[in-house]
Length: 384
Image 1 (tube, rainbow, N blue to C red):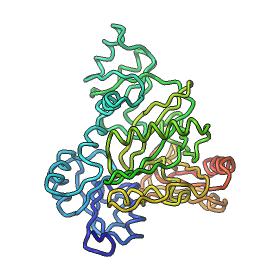
Image 2: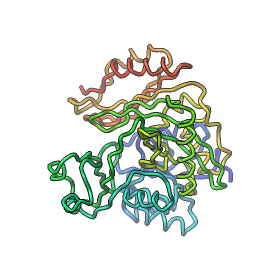
Image 3: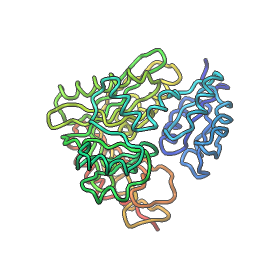
Image 4: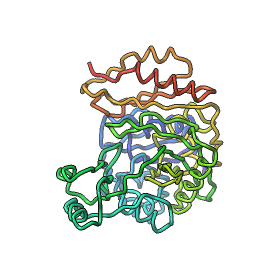
């Protein structure tokens, strides 16, 4: 099929920053794109060929949108999966598939999937309601501390809480959930696996993620991870095993823990471009966004090696500011060598909202990390 400068239409469900960055590459290749998002101000609205405002969880809305395109992909998991299944039955190519998304959308089902496929993961219990958690603790089936996760609709630290004592369970939302062993770990790692329909596979280098302690959001992504080669190899093999189990088409970002005993445990996965791969726009021969297109369109997979070491810093809204966004001191960070800001196009900031990211590239990872610290101290996401 001719995808370039042709009548081919690629549909993207979700018009946030991941969609916007995916559109950098559809524009590079002149691929016609149709994007749907619930917000009329979505970051992707300006870079696509057709923009539709619509509810991604509404069956009819998603089916009607999907019928207009040849291939449908996502930049957010929270979409109507029944609609995707209907579209697949009608011959529309949907990547990732409805089957993959059904597993990933529900964290309890996702954890059971790992258990069934012998993929190493933290021990867990599944609960229909938080009240069952208190019963489990009283009867010895569960002990503090543990990690509580909402089974559905959690993202960026939302729907996740460390439960240390009884009082922490009192205000948990009344939803299906998972209680997971709290793992003492040395590092949080991630590997992005690229796979096309033919089953060709490539992995990006293992990255290390440093988290913000309060917001439970990634603060820095460091590539390559500063870990021994043997640990990196082990993480890559676990990621490949996970990708093989899902048989997904597209990108699969596999987030993992490196335990104190150097075991690798899968935390969770995302079947799309991911925060842990943003460094690749400046740092890799093929960015994760271009690679996602190559995967879902059945094109040859690109080189996943890094040209230089890279560190990514998330730009999130400062704690005490809500309103029209101002990127204070952005000129100062742009004066630093190897520093590239990406602004997502969200006009309103609020505490911890993801507003952009900054990539720092350097031949020396230690230097890149030092500059990243300087970037973090200098730029502030505030409001007018």
